Length: 174
Image (tube, rainbow, N blue to C red):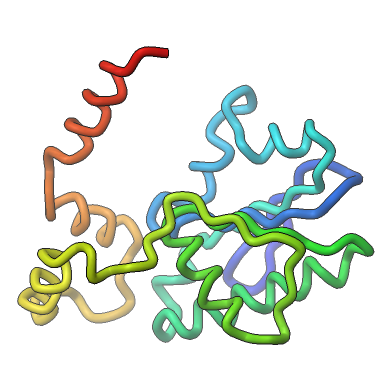
């Protein structure tokens, strides 16, 4: 684990094509490295990649808005690129993909591949959420907001969503 400012990079693998994994701000880095035998990061390293897993730690709670988070992400992408002769790829999971898209708006950021997994990009497709947020912004605590509190807030939007999702998964045929 390499600490860089308020964030950290976990490295997996020694040689190969570099890829940086960008998790959601809410789910934290362990979502991509859950257990040694259930780890996307370790799987990619075993396939011959040098994997950098970005760990937001508590940085977004102290950041001055999402623009500051995107600037820090650009810095991380450039730093990883300078370490390798191969072009860097990036994998953004959930909100991590949306942040990656924001980082790519800077023409100085060049990637071999940008991969987006479960990344929201069209927030107009969710009409209840913007209205709910607009109606409740006055009740939200002002920064810094802990990521755990933010996770609880999203959970409270639809407390049974997880139950329905995983019940559906359990009913699927392998």
